[in-house]
Amino acid sequence: MTPRHNAPAPIWRRAASVASLVAAAAALPLTGCTSTSDALSVTDPDIINPVDVQSQAGANAVRLGALARLNAATSGGSSASEGLFLLSGLFADEWENGDSFIARQEVDQRVITPQNNFLTDVSRLLHRARLSAEQATILLKQYNPGGPAAELAEMYFVEAYVENAVGEHYCNGLVFSTVTDAGEQFGTPTTTTAAFERALAHADSGLALITGSSALDVRARSALRVLKGRILLNLNRPADAATAVNGVATTFRYEMLHSATTNSNAIWSYNNLNRRYSVGNSEGTNGLNFATAADPRLPTCQGGDATCRTNGVTQTRRDDGGPLRFDVQLLWNARESSVAIVTGTEARLIEAEAQLRAGNAAASLATLNAIRPAGLQPLTDAGTEAARVNQLFRERAFALFGTGHRVGDLRRLIRQYNRPANSVFPTGTWNKGGTYGGDVNFPVPQAEENNPNVTQGNTCIDRNA
View 1: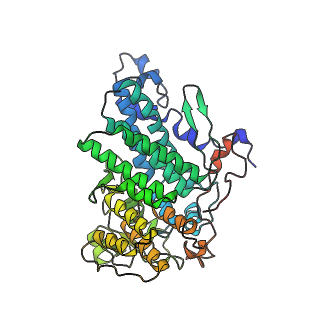
View 2: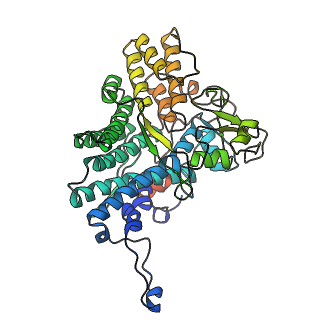
View 3: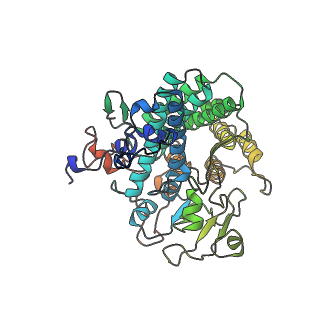
């Protein structure tokens, strides 16, 4: 066992010790060298003095840094990782592994070790965003108290979004640490329920700030309301979830933007360009037929066919060169494609689930049909309670594909609908040999063992759904 003092730094510390201060570096003025000695006296670029962001401009720079980190944590990824949306979809049934990296194969096969480097990288991305937003709220309150309320509320949104995402994906035993003026404050292992409650409190804090009706206010309020509804579903409070999203426009979209010069769309990069991922297709018996459903909410093509070639994908095989078919998503068919991480469509899906849970199957069906796109036949009553639940979650799967919802939904099917795990997650023979494991969530990465509050060799309290 690696001694604690030689272990990797804990997730939160390496991710964000003065994380948002580093993000603010881009906002600081640059001055030219006045002598050759100036060029040789280089300030460590990784360290930004706190005084440099103690201003209105500095607070705003930290705010923008938090939003950039949320982008990286979700659909943008980084130089070391693909971000949460891809990795979680690989763990569920949205994606299949298309390369030869053992760590990705662990995720796809549901046999994840705490040492998994992709898991560790994604955790760091998430905690970077959370801590940057936490620090931005402090700075905005102190140095820009008269600024737009929506900007401060959006920082609470980032905190709540990450906390909810961590609760949806990780085992009981997840950790939230922080940095204060007094130094590092190590978190202690907590439950997923506690993570959802923490997220709910931050969502409510953000909502309490917004009293106006400007475009910025409506955007932040809508994002927070839908997120609050999602959190309340996770807390098994469907009626409250429906109340939370009431009034959010179905057309609402809170988007992560991408470009060739900033942060590319990682979904396009890892699937369409690099072929490390392939769209899932009835994976492990229980998986949905995402690749072949011909559903307009998820347009796809098969590598090298006429449609793929029209969209710039000429390769016919996955990156590993194996015999498995290579399926490509066309929902985001360019490096610059934006990704909506919160939508009004999700609000309607939350309402439909609340209606079904309340015993009003007819209203739930009508709500689902109202948001189905043109070209799809209207749904009909599935006939039984179990079949209606299957129908609802299939609608959620296609409407929310690739946006980090699927693992949370599968876990809710286990917790709230009493489904056996082997009837929900992919199971049986894994497509690259061997069988699927029994994981229903991510373990807390081994790197967190450097936190003195975490038991070495046992980062999870339990691995229950």
